[in-house]
Every structure is written in C-alpha cells, then in structure tokens.
Length: 471
Image 1 (cartoon, rainbow, N blue to C red):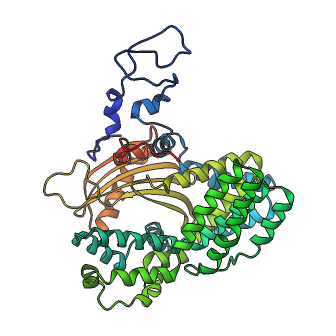
Image 2: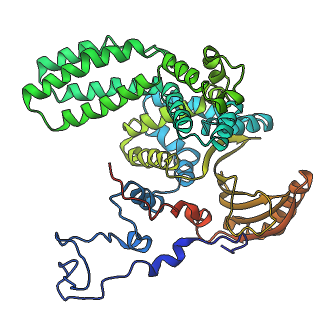
Image 3: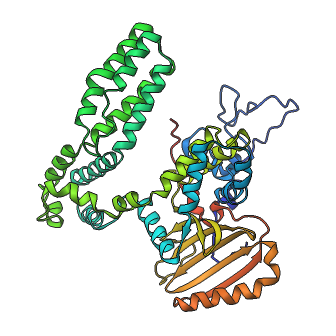
C-alpha cells in the first residue's frame, strides 16, 4: 500500500531489537544453550516463541502479547461475515438449521434493511454505544480531573466511574453469576449440587441496574459461605475453587454497582471545592436520571441489532447451524471479542446493511486523534480504516486521513472493477465535493492483499514494552 498517509509503523524496525542467540548447536532439541556472557533461563525454555513474537519482542504469555499475536492470526471479521451470511446463507438453510436459529437469522436479515436516514442513525447509535464515557456529565468530570491537583479528588472520581461501570453492567454481571453457579454445580457431588441449584432459584434475575442490595446480600451471606464450606469439606482445590474465585469477583463488582452507594459517593465528592464548582446545583439524588439520559445509555437501548447478532452467533457456536459452520461461528465470536479488547486503542464499528437492495457488510476502525507524521501547525486529524464487502463485487479496503476539510485516501478494489478505475475516481470526487471536502491525495489500486489493522494504526504496538501481566 502506498505510504500516502505518512504511516510509520514501529513494527518494521523491530527486527533488530530482538537478536537471536549467536551460539548455535547441531542438536535441534536444545534451546537457550549456555552463554557465560548472558543471563538465560534455568529451565531451558525459550521466551522467544514463534517468528512473529520474536519479531515484536513480545511474551505471548502476557495478556498484551497474546492480543498482538491474535491480531495477526485471527481471520478478518469482514471476510468471515461475508462467507457466512452474504454467500453461505442458502447453504445453511439447505443443511437444515434449527427453527430457533432460522428465526434469529430472519430477524437479523430484516434489521439489515435500511434507508439512507436509518443508516446514519444506525451509525450514530453504534458510535455512542461503543464509548461509555461520553456526554456532558463525563466532559465535566474530565474538566475537574484536568484542573485539580488533589490526588484524593482524582481517586474519588475514578472510583465513581468504576461504580458507574459496574452499575450499568449489573444485569450482565448477574447473568454471569447465575451461569457461574450453574458451572460450579456441574463439578459438585449430587447432594451438594441440588442445594446450589435450589439457591440459584432465589436470585432475582429481574433486578434493575443499581438495585443490587438484595442479590448481593444473598450471595455474600448464604451462597459463597456454603461454597467455602464445600471446598473445606471435600478438599476440592481444582476447578470448583477456580470458579468460586470468578464468582466472588463478579459478586464484588455487582455489589459495587449499587445505586445508593453511587449516590453517596457523588455526595462526598461535592465536598471538594473543585468538584462543587463544576457540579454546583446538581443534587446527588438526581444522579440516576442523569446517567439514564447519557448518549451511551440511550444508544444501548436502541441498538438492538447487537443482541440479535450475538444471539445468532451463540446458536452457531453451539452447532445449530451445522457442525461444518461451528468453527466459522467460533472465529466470528473471537474476532468480535478481539476488536472489543481493552488493548484495542481505536474505535471499532460493524455495519451489516442492505441499502437500496444491495447487501453489504462493513467494518470501521477510527482514531479521532491521529498524530502519526503530523506537522507543526496542523490541526486535529481523524484516521479511518474501512473494510467492506459488497455482494457480487468483492472486498474493498479504504484508508482515510481527514482534517481541515481535506482528505487523503487510499482505496483498494476487487479485480472485477479494474477497468472502472476512472469511474470510481470521478464518483469519489463528486461525493466529496457535495460534502465540502477536497482531496489532498487519492490513490486507487487493485487489491493485492488485505490491509492489516496494525499497518494503519501502529499505536496498537505502543504497549509492547509494558509490564508482563498474565492472568
């Protein structure tokens, strides 16, 4: 891909950062031969890993190292979605999929049909729903964080945000707790299993976000102590104890999302002068209404297609779309989770649509504050990687750099459109002119290979030298 966007990826120069051990041996089974000038592992194992890990200088046992490895190994979501839905839907139907999955697919395909106006609303809802801390309330919190020198106030605001996150995740955490108890019961002896299953029925699964006191007290006072007694009695220090640890963590987060505690914490922050200056007149008891009207809360309620999509993937992972498609659905799920990882530094959006009778699936990765190759005096720039597949045409990759109403674009198109390049160029120019945008540069190229995410966003590698933390 031509370097029209002044992309400088650190990965290209990292080959010399990790040097191979200069000592060689004829015995292929020996790793890390002793070198008096170096400190080596005592267990004779290599931390270098495969060629990709060696090139990046990463430890694949770390969470971040594993993320980087998967970025390069997991198939592109755009290609998988196209294979599964745009091309393979008829094959699944002929294979005799279950009625539940068939119904989910029908609903999802119906939701994909949009008008131009609906597409804009859909894109806005996805953007708002992808970033939790957006809106006036969170902007005011950021202003306080930037203005204050009080470590105590900053810690209090961070604790408040953690409570907000746990509160809004309450229903999801409750489902995880219920599923965790169900998994624990599978590894217990029959008599104890029956007791746990009876206790599970007492959980109030209809509890609203923030209404956690009853369920949290039940879990802390009855369920978790009973599980502790089971481990002590049976000396089961295997899977059961590990699952209890996860259950305890989810319970702690669920309890932390209690709305009454959240209101009390907000009231304590109002005692700080810097916080009170920004939130003067905001009563703590009004906090639930404020949080319910954030753009994130509104978007998550209206963006119902995500739930339909995940339900459909769940059916496929269970094999209800046919065993031959099970692995495809698993890869699809892994790709979605990877793009939502905490290590992904850019915004990721999915656009499955049928517009004007044309079916298309698109992915977008967006960095609203790109700084790569920026010159002095240049304003804010947005970098976008756009991947899309149009039925009966093929795959497209577009890399866009936009700022000050000017745009650099690189577009790779499928081979079938090779003789249409001038028409594409003219159409793009017209579209941009209609929206008041001028091209600084436009490069069109027949697709040779897909553009990788890490190639466009080298900031993905910024944490390569962070502390090795493995869970």
